[in-house]
Length: 258
Image 1 (cartoon, rainbow, N blue to C red):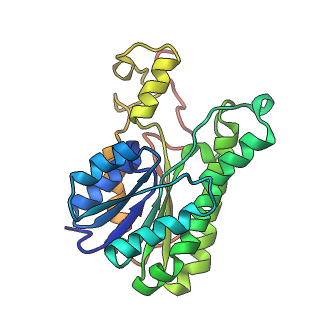
Image 2 (image 1 turned 60 degrees about the horizontal axis):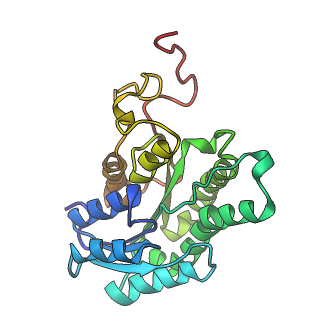
């Protein structure tokens, strides 16, 4: 029970990586605030963990949502030890298909909301020497041409993580960050089906995309998150970790089959 007694808020936790993290932290002894926009799915997860989980439905593009989430945690469980900023919009776009409204919504959900959530949680995290874990993406470094706004937002989130780690270190609040590679979430699976790939596409990947033979699972990310949410990682703060199957620098120097 590495997280025994802690109260952890995980945004975007009705599916994918967020759901896997929420389930894992409960298994490690924590109580959790489930967040998402799918109330039915959220209630189903909460019902699996009576007394250990609660649900807050909110649209993170609303500036009031972060305060709502923090208040839910404190009113339900009486404390807040950690925030996992996992929720994100991954809408596709390129330079020519991006307008101000699209870009502003992406930044509001992927950058502004995490910042406002840390701000709302600040007094509670300071009181308990808590921590923040931001879930970013390897797209933060340059990204893909059809993920322009998303990639920019993840670069900004990485800077936010480092800035807050520096700014809050004397308050005892730790801020660390994952840049996650390709993960087989339900949304990712369905996106590739929509792109025209066959139902068994995860089993037919070329080695340069998944050298291990498979894409990472949400549970892999959740397992890594436990260390950074626990006191085992204290006092480390400001770390950016790449959770991917090969390094960003010099990645894929030799592609099999070429």
